[in-house]
Amino acid sequence: MKVTTKGQVTIPQEIREQLGIHPGADVEFKIDGDAVKIIPIRKGASVGKRLVDQMRGKATIKMSTDEILALTRGDA
Image (cartoon, rainbow, N blue to C red; front, top):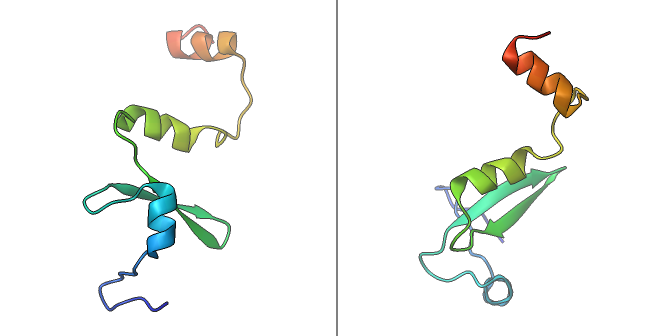
């Protein structure tokens, strides 16, 4: 499959059918190592929920809830 000069590719019909991707559907792209995942955005999936899902597991500092609350309240 080739990428057009506009960066477009055709998602094969079998894959579109399996994922429920139809004309006008919104999709999201995620990089997974050296692969790209295409994720259909389901109706009812809020922007906030998608952002939280994307950020989940990305933190590099381990803090307890109490430590986070103390930090945000200026108690630290």
